[in-house]
Length: 342
Length: 229
Image 1 (cartoon, rainbow over the protein chains, first blue to last red):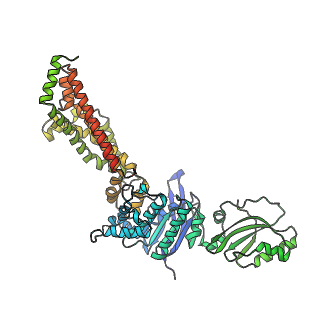
Image 2 (cartoon, rainbow over the protein chains, first blue to last red; image 1 turned 30 degrees about the vertical axis):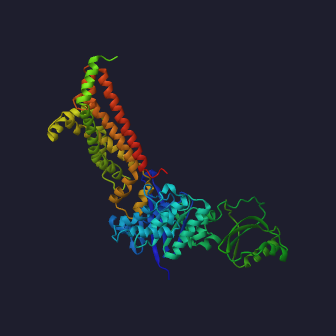
Image 3 (tube, each protein chain N blue to C red; image 1 turned 30 degrees about the horizontal axis):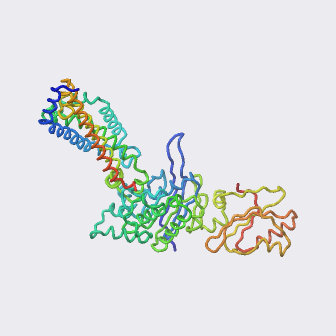
């Protein structure tokens, strides 16, 4: 049975007062399980950065409860909160390394803060191990300015894990958004490795669907300061139930110009039918031709996800037969389209 | 161009008092600068951290008062400040004249300025770095000592030399009130006695000293800044 490590209950955050009041987060409820990679996805302005800052209370929620590892953070005094923060770490879009310190000194930083005593050079020893783990053993003496974006983020990750005992939660605030696709990939692989090998629970804030695709187990879709839907990544992908979810799964919308008399059907692939020629089979076996209006599918792992919009034939009997056929395919959801995502 | 008498006076000054005057100028520059930083550095840090959005907000009324006092001290002309501070100087150091008498007025004139430039240097630090430290459980004091000051070090060093040169200028100006040093020589032996040779020689010496301070400052600042490859 999985165990909840982060629990957010009825969390609200309001900025400003009076007319300038902005409700950044409205009644957020989330349970994040120990050892999972949880994604929070939303477009900019959705409130996702505020939400992740409310988890370690860099931002104080206006109301609601945040419990991490059984400890209710929102009830803690400043001093105890600082101690609690040592059990979780954060990495940022802008890396936020200390520019006047070398990579090694940056990694030592949290260890200096906690004031733990040990034999001489223990911090450096631990920092070197972490440098090894993030794949930059030769960059110990480099200053941040001498490193590339991806390297800086690796140092930031090493720094985030340096605390002793090792943090159980890693919060990633748009950690890959400033990086190119190849570098993003390598950072995501590193996060996955940390999650698998060290058992660190990872919370990923992003606006990029592919980040969620790549590493998350579960995801919550945030829009307008509210969680629109949440669930397993494959479920949300194959069948987004809300407008917000569909907009993220199909970022380009379903740009369609159709004749009004055609009935449309949307196929959602939930990953079990990769490689089967559905449309061709329908045409060959039943003699019914469907027009593909739009398609946006992708392969995650070895399964394919995505949606396709088809125009049904004008003939009612053919249309009905086609629908029956499509609905019988395992792993595919077919529904008639009434509202297109623009 | 210059009379025999002018040259003779300059010769006398150079032979007997010049080294002492340079020494006085240096004391009047460095001592008040260090004292001004001793007060201005913590004050400047406080102006940032005590801000309503700072890491350790202080009551708004207190911050406002501190700001008003700093602005007030900065707006009083330096020569008037010397006169105003002189009773305090007499009480603390027992004199209002000479190099010793100038230390306190110069410090009082300089520390509000130093507080402001420290404030500016520290505000330049990326908010994200402070946030990162907070996310690791750093206390406000740790943030000051391990983030704010070390990260602002190049800017602080650069501003140290700005302050040094400003205070140097004040010290020369204080020559008019009998402060001692090169500025005093330029005024008493040069200007008052209408000896242009002495005056301009002193001015040239002052200019050379400023150049030395600034160049040293540039080298030290550049060496300390790890943001430069």
